[in-house]
Amino acid sequence: MKNTLKELKPFIILWLTQSFSALGSAMTGFALVIWVYQGSGSALTTALLTICSYTPYILLSIFAGAISDRWNKKTIMLVCDSFAALCTVFVFVLLKTESLQVWHLYILNALNGLMNTIQQPASDVAVTLLTPEKYYQKTSGMRSFSNSLVTILTPVLATAVVAFAGIMPVIAFDLLTFLAAFLSLLFLIHLPQPCDLTARKDENYRTDSQAAGEEGRQIKKRESILQTAREGIDYLRANKGILWLMLFLAAINFVASVYEAALPAMILSKESERVLGAVNTCVGVATLAGSVIVTFLPAPKNRVTVICNCLLFSMSTENFLLAFGKSPVVWCIGAILGWLFIPFMNANMDVIFRTKIPTKIQGRVYSVRNSLQFFTIPLGYFCGGLFVDQVFEPFMETVPQDSILTALFGSGKGAGAAFLFFVAGIAGVAVCLVFRRVKYIREMR
Image 1 (cartoon, rainbow, N blue to C red):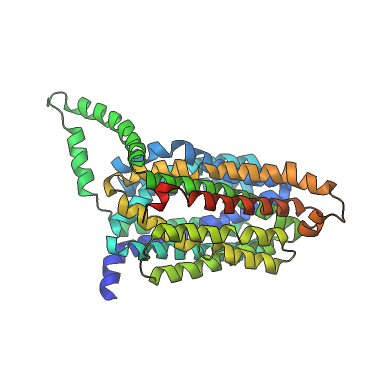
Image 2: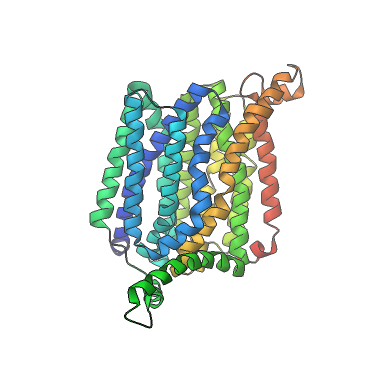
């Protein structure tokens, strides 16, 4: 145990401080979602917050991987964290002067999304560099554990603080957590560089003439950014199993994003922000329990089977309980069942990627993954918000009170969102059943 802690000490410091900072950021995001929905009453207006965050992430991720693989990862993380903190300061000032508008948040979320685009592959590779391979599943479980804890604490703390003191203390706490993470990364974490990456850099910068050395190095560096961005795509073309797993997750992310867009609309229409916080807390409790279990489990014989089964169980439970449930208790049970096995999926997916993708190109492959696997998230949020506001809610208003749809999904505002959960459940199950039959996915272990 002592030897394990010694080997994982750098990772643990990074993990704890970054998780603390993630809690602050998540609390601010949760509070702002409530602020926007209560002000607008529109699911689409609220969903656009996430859409603005993800759009730069999707469009520029491929080039971000090339940057991550060539630039100092610690510097990237420090600069991006600082920029995100600056955006939070702007929100604080605008709130203080009573000038904050929804469009301000859209712009700031887009800028934050741009920084996250650059930071994410650097952070992923940093974990690989700090973690011995024998601890990959354990550290993946630890990261899932902290994410779950953040999910649990975010709605509880944010709702409590907003109710008693307003949104300003939430933002102040966010800035405090940033400072703790920034100083720890700056002074306590040393990120080693992969030897093969260093060798490749030396080769790329070598020129035939000393007189033209600097100019030649700059030209090669510019060419290398484009070339390395393409290397991630070439890797996936040659490794169809990894590619199809990413496409599988892309389809799941679309369904999950429709769910995320519809959830605040349904719950805040029928209940209060406390109930929304309770459902989100149950999501965190479930993922926390799953994370603890997967951290100590032995490696499965077939990781892909675990991934497929976990997603099928999730898609066939939560959406339907949210659709047909008439009380917060049923919604909370749905949240627990829907998220309990997600850490199992994440851990096994993470191990597959880290063991099969060479470290020297992980940054660019992860960036291509970000574009392929996550481009459906803003689409899902947009469709979810649009469907709630323009399709399902108006449709349910026209349904007679004695119809079967009213008996299943209720009446009044929020009934349309419940109907949408039913459709999302069917779509999620169909996606799981189709992709698990793909040859390239079945052949992976």
